[in-house]
Image (cartoon, rainbow, N blue to C red; front, side):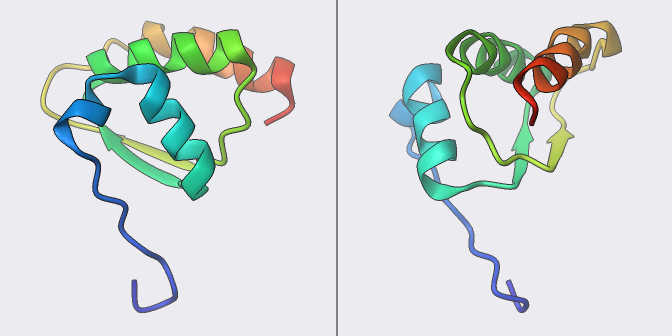
Length: 83
C-alpha cells in the first residue's frame, strides 16, 4: 500500500456470492487475491464461463489443501481469453 495499492475488504454476503464477487474483482481492478482453493474453484467457473475481464496477477491460496489439477481450467481459460 506504500506504493499506491489499496485493500478491498469484501463483506461476508459478497464473499458467498461468487457472481457478485467476480463483478467486484472486475470493478475494483483487483490484481492480488487471497482465497481458499474451494472458493476459487467456484470463482473460476463463473469467470471463465462469463469471459470475465479479470486483472488478477497473483492468487494466494490458504486455509485448505490445494489440488493443483483444479487450476488446469484456469490456465486454459486464461490462454483462451487472452488474459
